[in-house]
Length: 61
Image (cartoon, rainbow, N blue to C red; front, side, top):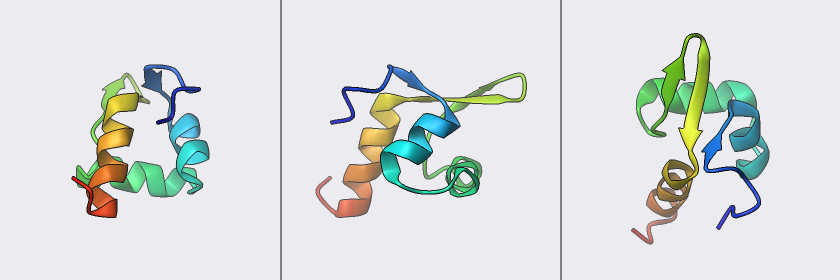
């Protein structure tokens, strides 16, 4: 799942992969529903975290 994306994704990558807006990605990060980390002002999101988020939202996990 999401193998075409890098192991560490940007907010733009996540928004594109999930078909949501960048503001929604920031909201998910701030709420802790999507795990990521910041380097300065830039969020980095592990691809595995995106996969876990999708599975948790689909009820498959």
